[in-house]
Length: 196
Image 1 (cartoon, rainbow, N blue to C red):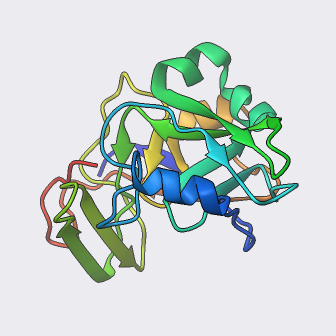
Image 2 (cartoon, one colour):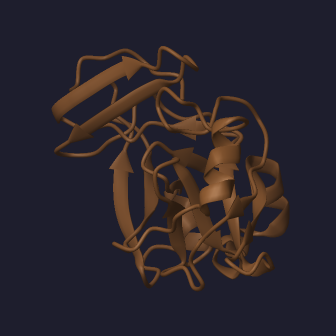
């Protein structure tokens, strides 16, 4: 058994949606037509959303696997740490103006939050991305690289070492689901290490 990590995930049942024109443009650029997720690669994504006021400190753009965060919430980890580990994009509202209090984010490194039941894993035939879904008890495998502090999760959230969550007072943030994940020596789902 290994270290513990914290998974922060949106609690809202009100995800955001891309504007129609923006969604069409995304399909021709950053959005994979096979898995409806951002194509692999390190780049920030700007989102033009239909919504006037996203809910919660974490949210997501529905139908395209793009996580969003309230800027002040994200910056609680420190600007240098965010810049080192995440790629941050802008969010524009229905009036076309930048919503400066919100950003999109993608991890320079990602992790699969794994589970013990109803496990499904496949590779996207279009972009080659690993896709994973599971229920039951959540965990991490293998141990994340220790020099990285903030990871994007496959569940549109953030994974960080438990000590960092305590240091940044992120153990019980309002409006966010917090899961404590243990790094296991062997994965109960029977799958090998999966590249995000």
